[in-house]
Length: 162
Image (cartoon, rainbow, N blue to C red; front, side, top):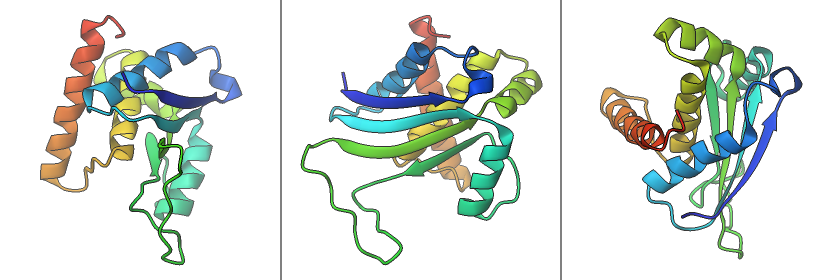
């Protein structure tokens, strides 16, 4: 199993809604199903609509709330001056950060007629897949993303995590 250094931050209004250990298992299962074997580090933030809206506007130029944002770091990334990031000598892949709007998850769970936990799981999986390089900007890429999400969901269901 992948060694995963996961930093979880659940904003105050949502602290009692989700268990950190459960979130950790979602991330670890996603990494395992995707075949990650090297050590990784990432952050997961459960926050509100206002925070997500502001970040979506600042970083993606979209003046709207969304359900999940992923900010990926990769060895192929460059800073704004075009200078490539240097991978750290510790061998740990620093994947980035996933932010999820808890209020949006509640709304979407109602729309899809499933539990908030299932919706959060979908959003965690989706965000981590983005950190691993999956895209969903066109129909073909989106279909691959959905297939990967379903593979992870199946594993989570088999292990009674959903």
